[in-house]
Length: 550
Ligand SMILES: O=C([O-])CC(=O)C(=O)O
Ligand SMILES: [Mg+2]
Image (cartoon, rainbow, N blue to C red; front, side, top):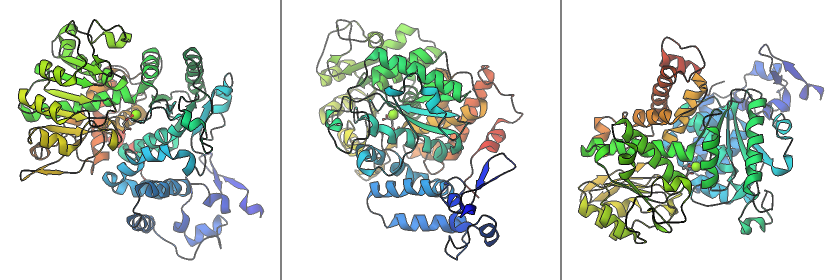
């Protein structure tokens, strides 16, 4: 019995479990791949079936099983269990076919997983920090077994995808986002920590649900959230020095406030603001390469003026200023329209950030009228209003512009402002279209259209890999602009000919390494990096990558 509980110290200082404990450690476990010698050495004899398998055979079994599971959410659950048993097989399987597995691990399936979080729950993952731990957050973080944590992805659950406030059910998002650091950019999974900052929820339905696993209280007031976040930021930096904080899916106003407060003080970023902005900029740049237009000549209209819309506007304006426009001129190229109508200077309900975008012009609550008046060449939906890009909206836009660029970014699928089919049909095949989720190819009048997926997963894993390698002091907007251009530059002539706005997902790891290389070059040039500059950046980055193998 004793052999099953003792651990053996390894030369690297880590303990090598033995016996059943070894089979229950997902990082070390090799399952049926243990050789006969290893089985003898680690007390595993009799605990495994006879066959000794290769990693490839183990992966084949997983793929064979998944091919027979019809329901995406069942596939998701199977994969989560696999990760909890054997991390190597899990990553090897999903990295063997990222295009197939991104929609399972992540958007749109992760949306269903979050909504059913309390029902699907099997075992804890990541950390849950609540208001009750106030004053003791550092102590609580020390319960995490890994000491060299490099990224914490933290959500309050306050605005999960387009689903609104789902409180602690939102934990699926930090988990999924960090899995994509590894699946899309080969960032080693060991130092990735998902955190749900459980501040309560406005969602009364969930608070009354017997299976709900979060605090059943309304959210803490703003000043208390700010205190809790301040303590959290200090604590993660104290317990895990050099950590990068990735903010994800906070309520919009909280997201903007926290990013403004921390971006110049600690290593952090907000994926919904900066990652989404960069992917939108990448898509617009790629679209303009196809239409031959220039960014400074575009008129860009947003439906939705929350953290994503404001983040994209800010990044586009920053880019326009580098092209020579004044701040004023840059802002004039952009309009935002939200639930209360056009953002213009007579509005009295605007936040400080929204006011920056208010022009002196006639108020309007009619979106089609604004489309007709402003004549956008680029239309971006970040509203969570499914179907808001109606036939009338798209037809009106198409009357004024030869190749309308239309991005329906709200997700999951049932929140998108329009479908690919609608964008192509209403624009009579003229639209360059992308959505936050992947829509199928669509055939219109004999031509096949390939919708893009304008999702921040093209950006944040590369930002993660660059940060992992260069350990920058801070991340600034320029890092995201570099990421956007690096992404757009990877759509070669053959992809452009097919109307593609984003690189193919089949080679996503290669793509993101290329993007990360450009970001790291910028980090060295700008003095953000804190490590010594290697002679050859790309091969150095490649030497740091996670490779799922035994
Ligand atoms: O997760 C995604 O697909 C994009 C995203 O960050 C969000 O919608 O909050
Ligand atoms: Mg998000």
